[in-house]
Image 1 (tube, rainbow, N blue to C red):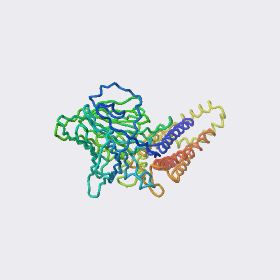
Image 2: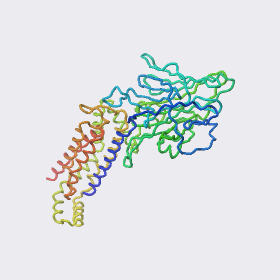
Image 3: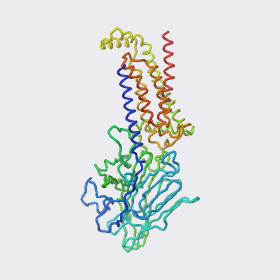
Image 4: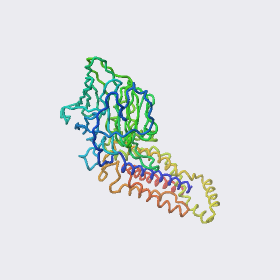
Length: 556
């Protein structure tokens, strides 16, 4: 029994260590790290008709018969700068570059970088160094010259501001092709919405029918995910969704080893990171090809392109459009978006437990208005749900505690003869009808719940910078004064004293060390997770103390 308990405690300790390393990795090399310099600006012209396509420019379907270049890295293409257009809405501060009409920088005004820097919005997109993450789009075709993300557009202003009383803001970019076709690329921002609509207006002043294909893509730099022990990091990479194949992650490493090229109907393509997501949202009935590309300099491209061309008759004006979501992975917002976007909240392999936990936690928060108190109430409910099973386990542990004097007598009788000692102990358990493993069951059950709640606290943007009381200003960050971890360690020490003690002196010392070791782990955990574990320990102590008193009273 002692060896089994020791194994379970060390297994839990190993899980805690791995989660701790993932938490440290997320803080140190996560996508929110800041680059120090931007790549130098160079001057490049958009490729003309008939020229070799740029490495990061998708080919029109009419040209897809070209030989496959395979997964090898492609020549480096530095992001060229044109004129910078500043955009401000109630939710965004953004930079659109006239070179390509790219969305080069985007800051979320409702989400500060840090709690103590409320004036500094979180940079979801930027074009600097290893934090490169931009949204590119354009038109492609088999005949003529089309505006793509290598085209120089012109704008009629440098600043665009969503003013009070204004519900939407349009940012137009103009381009006239050599064949006379007039293009207007328009970003449409709406008040209170993280969805940005993108339109291409095509004014065909020629005598020939115009036919073209829309594409949109994300380009981002590589993000380190840590070593082999970092088994539970927050996912940073690509994801796609289609009604046929549902949700699928496309990691940056997958883009390098297995280039994506898939024809689909509807769905979306996205770049995920901790708390936030960017996603091209496609019409349900539209046929597209999802693709990936890899560029030198550790840069990755994930995007879509139309398979069926849009046609505009001579003398007519046509519109091709798509929507782009750039914002938080907030559940109530994601539920309003196309099917499958709620899956971007990545709870990992314990989603089946994490998702109901968050639903219940959100319902409690709706009543109390505080995530910290919601975690406490959730802990009480979880404890109540497991009460019958825990009661049986604690009864078994109470009986084991009652057997301690007899076990110690056996230890003294057989000394170092462990074989005879174990046989005598098993005979005693059989005679007294005690299950020596019964007290381990609550630990086994709590491990997946613990990890599932860790995912909820790690992935749910609702927890980000959410306060509890007094010194706990952010439940998703560690306790700044380590008060909760110390209380948790003390509660675990008390809980250890209530458990039946091993007869082996070495194991007794090991069990005395465990509360201190766990306290060190929890020093760096999110305060919300430590709060859950502390409350759980206190409830377990109360339950175990009561059951122990009842069992000991029955023995008198």
